[in-house]
Length: 220
Image 1 (tube, rainbow, N blue to C red):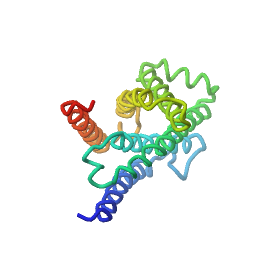
Image 2: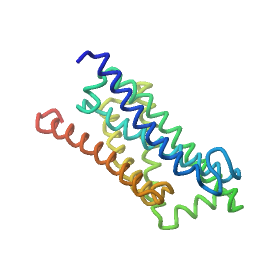
Image 3: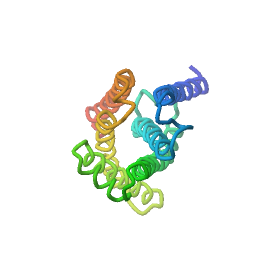
């Protein structure tokens, strides 16, 4: 098949997945009596927008995981030069969305509970509801982004850069448990939960197959 046709199909499929997640999120939040993306108290809107930023960051992170190597799933649709650019700059977009998620959620909770921002964050970390796992994943993401910036500025070797990127696997794992056990939309919709689990498993399978091929071919 022509490369341009494969590229177009790749963008359509990727866009379709993002649109599905966005549409599903909108349907789940539109009927919320306390408010949604465009209605309700300031605190409620901040919480909803924060959850949306988190879900988009998660989608982006799974997409970036597929661009880490020459996997067949995305490699069939996108040339390696495009995958490299997507991975290089997409990481900073995902980092920005994750930061927006963090700030919106905790500022919204601070306003709703009328408590200081720091106390709200501290209570979340100590509530036993995967708070510490989430914090661990956020720290790892910050480290990966930091070392990526150093690599782009030619201040670290490619070998060290690759090693730090293995932390991304732990980030995705902590992200999955954070969403399944803490995410509001995942709690109220079994369909959304199973859809996300299937998407996560697909990405894990693709990465495992890619790593397995590298290992048995002696390129690891």
